[in-house]
Image (cartoon, rainbow, N blue to C red; front, side, top):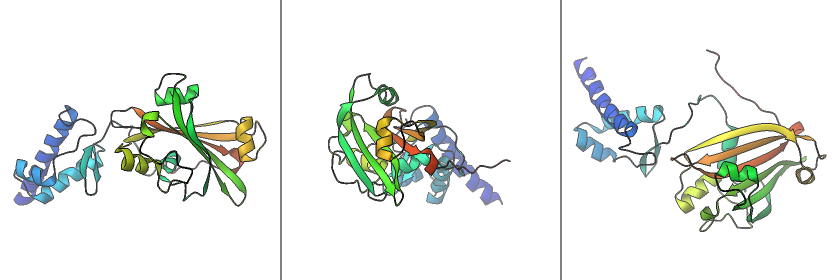
Length: 244
């Protein structure tokens, strides 16, 4: 029993020290934590002790561990429930090739006011738009407009006429080393515009669901936006959550 209490004190000491450094800004959002080996040496503890401390930090949402790279300090994100589902995450993680997307356009345009506001760029600023439609056997089911600040486009495949073979989040990290730390998701019901109705094969003014997801970096800045329009009669919103 005494040894178990001693082990507990050891990992709590490591846990509290790392948590304090995160909270006081010593390890700022996006910072790579020292390696397990470095932490073992610094705190004079065993590797399992360090692993347990890091596990608890992940559980509290303070860090994110990437295989082969290490543990990073996360930005401040709203508390979430593990059982909830997030439709917008699919838009960030699903590849165009997996969803059988048909590319409609990929180029530089003046960002609409809503897009400029959510991307935190000045009104009238140009941005990069990658727009595609997803269909099933019954016809078009989703019109997706992915918006990016111009500084993110160079060195990526965003302007390619071919479907992307990986999700937006993975692509931006692989090509630009940009880690999207968290997302803000908005869902509203509205009438389809004439252009949206034409692409989706519905009547102008028909009800649609509009799912808007902004991806933010660890400092909280919006770096990417996906605006998806879904025919209201072909989709439903479903969630699961505890009542206790």
